[in-house]
Length: 293
Image (tube, rainbow, N blue to C red; front, side, top):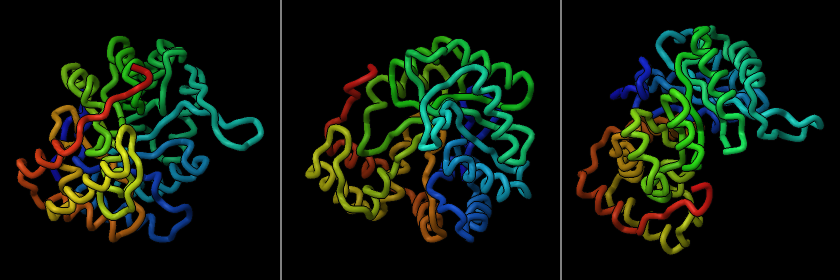
């Protein structure tokens, strides 16, 4: 599988990455599924400290331990568990990041995190302190690169101006064109890579029932579903569409079963004519962000 450089870092990521959040807790096939993904050429595995209260990181670390030097691990930080244990709240700080990386390293059974990401962001965050924490961890060798997971243009612009991020993870698909308005070209110009999520629109672009998407009606979604189906390769069309933009280094796809993994890898490798992709892309008007601009 082709690999792309992540920002200005020395990391090269596979065009398809494995979104580990979709894995079912304590499912006996998880380890085999991750190992099969490695065999298929996938080298980036994305998790987060809050997924199943740390269990996801533990499972990913255990599964990847035998092939650790052949893969890249990305995880996220920034939320703290509520005092009553009922969930999480966004409360990032320099100290929280410094402490959080130690816990993630322990759960992942590794001595470095390849890509450490802020799991969100607002203009009210102590941005300079967060950047300082990431730079400290990078200088210590505990992380190799850092980025943010955000769809907010105003936050993304601040990190472009003030930090050395190598990546931004954001939602982008044929049914979510919002990043095209300002973010994608700006990130590409800044030599910052995009990791896309939701590129199959949670299966709506493949085989799930139509559901409203930001800025699109059910009728719009149904039209898009029919259009990608007519290409004969909905998976390939959807993934190749997002990867066509030069800012995008990898599409992070959630995988739960061996059949899903096989379908994604097989169909992605089947080329779809560029004119077919453009025809599908031009079917609907582009939606735009209505907040955090």
